[in-house]
Image (cartoon, rainbow, N blue to C red):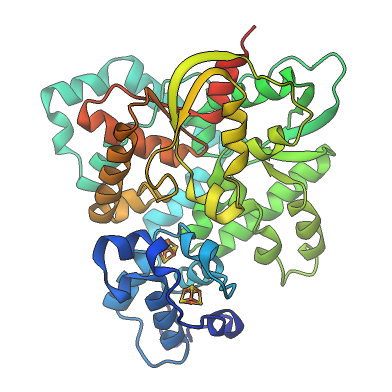
Length: 415
Ligand code: SF4
Ligand code: SF4
């Protein structure tokens, strides 16, 4: 927060909290600590006190807000409609200290598809040449600074194939665009390929939108609202120009953020209306697929799998039924529920790097839940969850695959 500037949040949002405490049980950080200051109600109280200037924005106060995962599990169960996700994002935008490193990462890398692609190629070489394996085998990896070492340990799959658009269906029934995003573009291009291939097999044309870039979700979560607004305008302009029936998203965090464009640009007269109509056309890929006129079965795959609800799909977008319904249409697939499938895995954007202690505890609980099912694969719909769960399983030496819903459908529907 810059000195002299007042901390401000929409008071109608804050005042909606009636302190009932119904959100406490849903909150992962409250479940870990049992502390009111690490609960949604406590954080709302803190934000209110900051707004009324009853407490100062000290590092200790900020820490309680920083430890929030932004998972929005509290928002989903709140009977009073507190817009918690919006409040915490606005609070972070004011409390986040200026950081050159953050600017380089968010504005210089993530927001620029060409820079990201170049870095992705370097990363791919790092993996393909065996350098990564060598650094691990010799222990030289321990020479990296802790934050970088932690990022490395998440093992983003840098050598996975890039996105390859499928052939246009002979008689398409709909035209959609697919968000390629930033991290997903370089780390999970083959998941995009699976999404597009499944859509094409069901008669949906996926059109190319070369002007698209990052959706801005990581910028908003890290408190860089100016960059997030710029990226929202760019995305709206790019996808509007494509003239499609829907913008399909296969990363839950991105989809949830794109659905908030109307609120993000509400005070921009040139964009507010465009943002509202854009949001109406955003669909998570599972939501879109489940809305199609589907055949009775979606292929065959003999496997026992369990499904992990990504927070930004289940809590932020209310999508729980559709991914499960799609998986249940696959013949031979035994879908078993894990305990607390919708509890955050500790990924939460950059949370697993900046709050390692809580992230590790949540990761451990999630891996326990997965292993208790005896499944040979855990399925999710968000790249952050996939990375976090895969790292946790790897650390335990567990032989459990981590797949996106569209990858499972793609394999099952393969001719
Ligand atoms: S945020 Fe909602 S659920 Fe939580 S205490 Fe306030 S009103 Fe109750
Ligand atoms: S967003 Fe998640 S971690 Fe943050 S207060 Fe709400 S439930 Fe707790």
